[in-house]
Length: 209
Image (tube, rainbow, N blue to C red; front, side, top):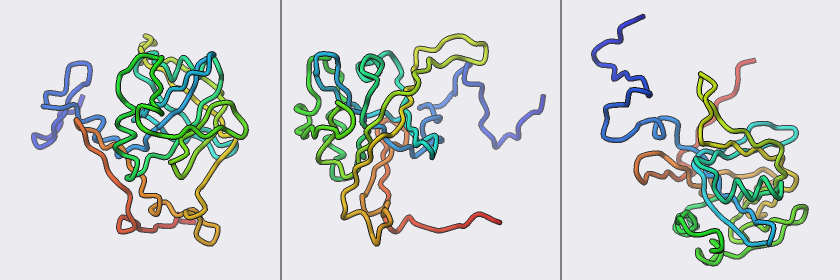
């Protein structure tokens, strides 16, 4: 096996990283925030942000979030087969953070964070009315992750097909969605690092033909 140069910090995660804070979450970032709303069989609402979230397919559109531990969002999604995703913006950052509190299942994070649940048009799960973009999703798969040795990990990936999209019209400029205008925030790793997308961060680069 090769030996890395002295100026490269190398480690095998199973043996520890040897740093004050695990760099993995900061390297794979900034990441979109999976601000996920669900409800249980009794209709009790749950709203929680997940830093492991992304889009995985165009047609049909499929998004997914990963939960470390079998949390309320996963349990609700498994039982109802539905969830909504809500865009976390700079204006909603503090309320998004409030919704991350570790509270019992009977606590409504919408109410806790001072947010309004707006009923879905296709699914039964409401979404955050204050958020400028919402996806209504139907669960397609729930996958328990595993190691390279096929050992199960206490982490579950929830994938869902987007069956309805809601966009504030102020974000549509001549019919084109303006990403920066929404001022979305992203998780950057570290103990509390976030980033905001602004117009100044934009650059364009077309694929080679």
